[in-house]
Length: 314
Image (cartoon, rainbow, N blue to C red; front, side):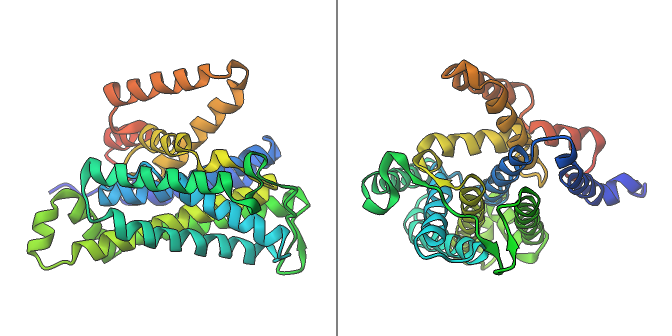
């Protein structure tokens, strides 16, 4: 029996090291705020991928967790004057709580019914943010202070803010990696592949689904809360259904069920928005074409196709 190659045994570690090196060195050549936006959306896509890629649950309302955490963190930092780490933790807690409530309702159904329930809940959350007095309506919460990390490090300095976002992104990515490679992650994969068999083996499938949903919501919340501090703004587009569609595109474009795929997909979509902003609504058309090509030509996504050709798990 042939022995696995060095690349097959250490491919994920090498890819992770390259990703860390890229984000560590990229600020020397690329605008840091742009990179911070990429990392926030990459974490959001990783959270979504944990749910759909490893548990097989398609959520059409994941933007509600990004939005609620952004509003919660912005309100905590601006009105309550909490330090940034506490504001982010508060945002994560709010997203996790919303994930628990919505998960209890959604996991009772499967397939398209699950997706439609999450979409309906997300629309309810969106209109709540639109009408609530403390959210600023269509103007959003503006001029959110970045504050001092642990009361010491001034995040108004771009380098300090970049380091904070980088740390949050790495922590979230490593948490996803640990979940996927844990016994819990193996059960999630079993549920994705054959749920009736997982039930026959004695696993309480609904409990595993709910926990995965809450974890995914919390990680999406970490992305939303961090993004609100980066741009000093919490606004309605983060909770809109279109954002839920974009995270689906990020995940599929990068590679469903891969660890690095959502990061690559998020980078591609953010770059597209950045360079095609002058085309206005045509950006949505271009995204639709890319989505169709991705589904028809390389269904595994960019990273998935590379992993298949190199026979390396990524």
